[in-house]
Length: 79
Image 1 (spheres, one colour):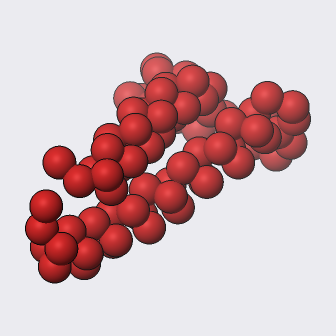
Image 2 (cartoon, helix red, strand yellow; image 1 turned 180 degrees about the vertical axis):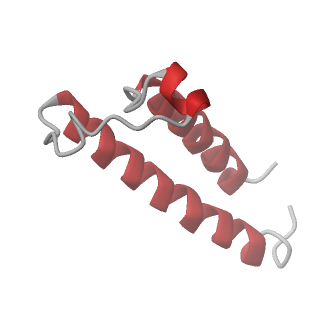
């Protein structure tokens, strides 16, 4: 197992964890019934929600970069 694979594993676990921590923007009944509530549609994110979104975006970009690096470099430099 390469070092880049370990980084991918760690980043993917962190990404799953941070996505699970995010608050759902829809109620489960609305998701299944097709109803859409526009009451809080324009609500601005604050505090913890903003940081969760920044961390999610950063981890997603890092995962993409490491996945591309793993695809190109791991095959060329075997252990």
